[in-house]
Amino acid sequence: MAADYIASPLTYIINGFIANHSFPDVWKTARVSPIPKVASPTELDHYRPISILPALSKVYERLILNQIVKYIDQHNVLNENVTGFRKGHATSSVLLRVRDDVLKAMKKGEITLIAFADFSKAFDTVDFAVIIKKLHAIGFSHSSLNWILNYLTGRKQLVQVNDSQSELEDVLFGVPQGSILGPMLFNLYVNDLQNDFTCRCFQYADDTTVYRSCTPKNLSQCVQEMNDNIQTLETWATESNLLLNENKTKQMLISTRQMSRTHNLGDITPPLTIKNISLERVENFKLLDYRQILKCSPVVPFDANKKPVQSSLKTPPTSAMLTEEVKYHIKFFIHYYLNYNKIKSVKFIQKKIKKGEEWKQHVVEGDARMCDVDPSAGDERVKKKRSRKRGTLSQDCATMANASKG
Image (cartoon, rainbow, N blue to C red; front, side):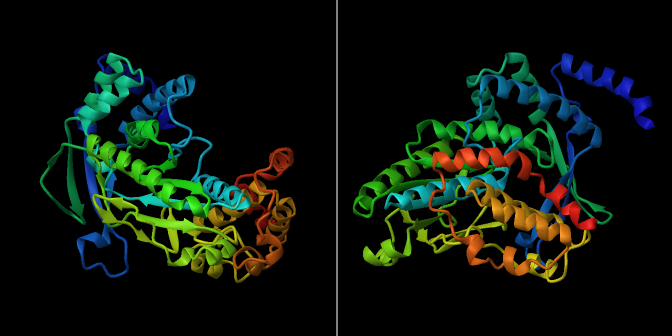
């Protein structure tokens, strides 16, 4: 194996770089390839830039990341509501936690006002001086800061399309796209947003969800508090060199249908603003990319972009059909039913997968027996019960999907 021959010299080289608090310049050049996001791209926005970095640089970064994660865990640095790129967290966990708060509010006769903040090219606008200042504030040593500054600066990139390459250009802002360290550095960069918030706030990468629950009669007070927090978000974004996009930031007012009819909530657009521009109220929102959709009246646990899942499950599932996207949907359902004590439903899904039977109508389209939200969600009794069951039922989706092979 090649590893037997390169491990020793590579270890020697990397240890030398660590001792000098440096990152080799030759590993700082990225090759960017534009990948189409649509079938027939005609505009620049129809392409997604994919950054490719040297493989050995990622080996070095992984070693540093392990040390940073160890420090973060030991000193409890990251806020629990910063959930992106962390072990034990997933995009589904954000939606489940938001929904749990919404359902608890409904049980108390409250409505929930949510703002979905949108940042333009957040990873690409990280300011090097600002991130060093923030890392210093959470206890990073001078040697660590010197290494990170060396890692971030002096980077270059070129664009490659087929065999054609552009000239090299300097990268003056941003965490390196396609890197191992970039996502964690971004987490640390945005972590201090939570310090001055009075409303509930969840962050997953550059997706920020802010919300507050209240009784319908106290909606005006809730709007004022939300606007205060949005102003805090604006100020923080300016200080952090991040661009808050007021046109893509949306709001949603979630309630039961009965509360909506009683208080005419369907006709209300709460006066939430960013930069004196009113936020558009929407009836549903794709939270965290294409995978999850929040609806203004949450009756079923999951309402997503179903077409790829439905097409995959029209026939008994096989290993070839279980793409990453389909596995993700299965996993989300498993997590949802566990969180809301739907133990029988979890067993039902497992049984269908193992037998290879058609279960599209039950899992994707929704069955009333399976999709009705348990009104006791969040109670201590439910938490204890699901805790006992979680160990045996909460398996990784890929593991469960493999049962279909048999």
